[in-house]
Image 1 (tube, rainbow, N blue to C red):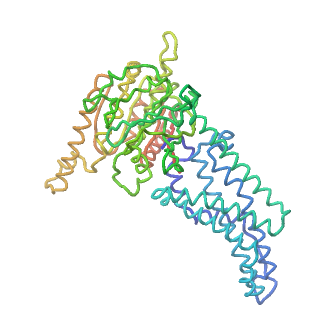
Image 2 (image 1 turned 135 degrees about the vertical axis):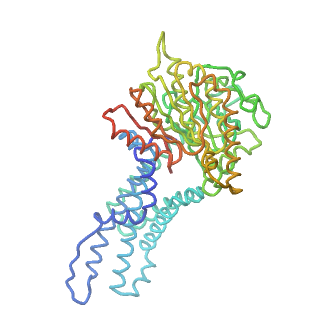
Image 3 (image 1 turned 90 degrees about the vertical axis):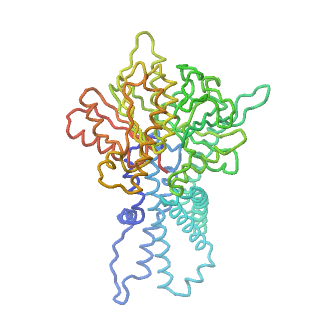
Length: 554
């Protein structure tokens, strides 16, 4: 989950699930046509059916808009400032309307042939324009069916292949369907514009990716791809990437994300990740001084290979946080852990292809205090903000002091060992922690039942006793892992259950000043954070409470 959202996550999810019914009602105003019957024997004549079909054959007009909204380099992004996930929401709705109008166009003309002569319906399959029209409709239906949210989550590969194949079938079918009827039809101009933008957008992405794929020429030749190394830490891993060329600093701030491809059989898949630790970071601490929760050298990989810190790789390397552990729900989370787990299991040196970075950066430097809410791998957004503050402090001259005086981190995790990923980065940024008061609150959500609730019961079942033991072990493990941070943080507390966002908001509001709230994580956590900010906005007259959500949805 990686960039800011103009639409709340629950609204995007609701819009996805609404799907067919809502699109049907939305498309009615533009496609409806009032017809009055002139013959008592039939409600609609052939001429009237032809008129209706003519009104709803304009789906090809929506095709350029569908492709414009789908591109990662869409002009709508830099013209309006809207983020990519929100643009994808518009893309899905407009695409549904285009396919539904095409379906109505097809069904309507089927009735025209049946009214005229039932046998002519079967004879029409000998006509080229008729068959190409059906081909375009099949491609559009493939696009809609493969884009169902559940299909995207369970099997991303099927969604990707059906989407590319369906889009090509839609374009080719529409083109020859119209060209076979009349080569001079003006509707062909919409398809020419669509193809031109698609080719331009793909070419731009190819050039952008190739720039970071091939490095400068040296005596040893060209560097191909980005060298990558993985350091495991619980369910998550640090993916250190050393690209052939350095990423532009202005595009790699908090909120920036990059698409990653692996050089193997799954080359066609590109996965977005937040840039957690950018390149060109100041040397706030050396790798040898970085504490390791497990008592080992932090920069020794799981396979025993010596890994260097990103400051020692020519200033080009940056880091991502990826989920590589086994998922608690293997089917639902397959898209998050399947591809990244293959990276972890690779025995050969990793070679990756990069595309990006994308997204808009948001700095916390102009706030007085900040509440950073994270769930799982959403902690990468929190680390990115800390890295950005460290850069601001390093670039400052003289007795410069950050405007931001206090940061409250609320992090919900299911795996106790995952806490080590945050310990590593906060320890590397301990030079920054001396200038800001940082409160860290970790919530262990691995077990639903809390210790307090179990102790309050008069009788225990074996399941409840086991839950209590597991919760206690999880808290002890997190406490042990985070012990190196006790001297660096103002507050360090470990909890069970889900965080109460409102309590932290009230604490910061009581201090006054401008407050920034950043949320990155599962939809449920972001929804609770948003509702908490909304409730406090109603109770206060201050405009200094600003909410910013970082998430990425396909």
